[in-house]
Length: 286
Image 1: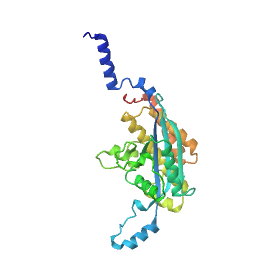
Image 2: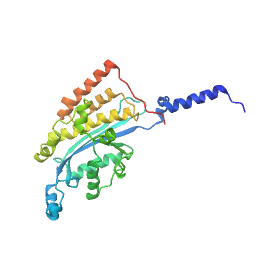
Image 3: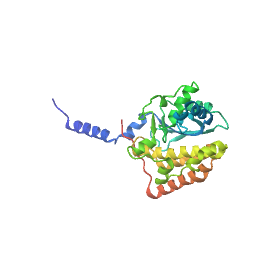
Image 4: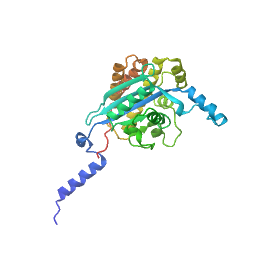
């Protein structure tokens, strides 16, 4: 059987390029948009129910108020759409909710609806597997809500979501969000972490809203960097951060953190990238 040496060499080169991901640009046009939803929550302790439990259990009661008694007092999420061939994602929505405007059930129902609307979106949290997702599943049962696809798989390694704290940690000790942010020069929490409970109980909703939104913004930066480093997305990182900052300032103009901390920092990142040359990371071809 005769084999055309030129065709054979071309086939080998094509296979090699595909293996190395060098043809990713040619194949991106055939891929669907990727979506990620970054979310965070703040809580109020349900002291009355905990006290009832403690009385009924006596010395057997758990001495600390753990997650079954944590009620969602504020929620925030940001949705990004990454279109094939585009280096800057579209910010499709930025949401900040608190219990001064709606109930816990209403906040959770609105968040679930956002996830139901885009079942292929990847849900991203910082430490969500430790508490947030457990609270959401408890609430779904309590309020007769249907869990979105991103929350039905109980495995901490479910592909439908990423707990960034777990992902960046691997087997190292888990860092707090502001700890990791400080180490990587990302702006974070406008109020100290341990003050949020008091802010909720005092009803200082502007600060509570800024705190939960800040956590989403910080987590979004870590998410973009993490996914790009793992070649799971392609984006121009400095312009992506600027797009997020602009969208959040426009959507939530009352956020001091977004206006005074995050947006100036994003502008600084973009300016610095102009000096060293911005880089995009392309995902491997499938």
